[in-house]
Length: 175
Image (cartoon, rainbow, N blue to C red; front, side, top):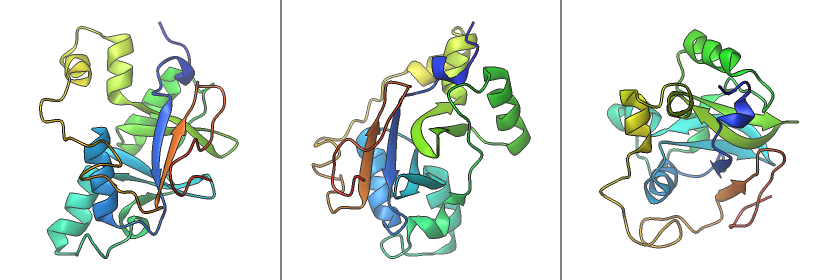
């Protein structure tokens, strides 16, 4: 049984700048088959933006996703954990704050994400949530993050970590 977040987290973070448009963020989510991105500035987490945030906080209100920034819609100052946070504490934080994902940071730098799906796969691999989390998408879009449907204009940072360190590893706007 996993004892700390390091053992269950997804050690990859996709981030956008606060000034990126919601369309850019949505295209990146589609290209990477993810439901959230971190909003970062100078390598620091400012917020979390989910596909649901875009739908409920912007599109449903008639906002133009081409002109609305990620900063305007994201959840600012998200609850975060470190790699050494006990899994039980991460679960408690998710329940207390009614969130499905927690950014994992060390010294303010994003290292990964831990989600309900990550926890289900590790703690109850036979559960429906774990099955859904492992399912492969059937509607993949061609081109990847820099091809059709993927942003390539300098508002995106890509972070890869091994769970023990991290930082930007290329892509326009990394750093």
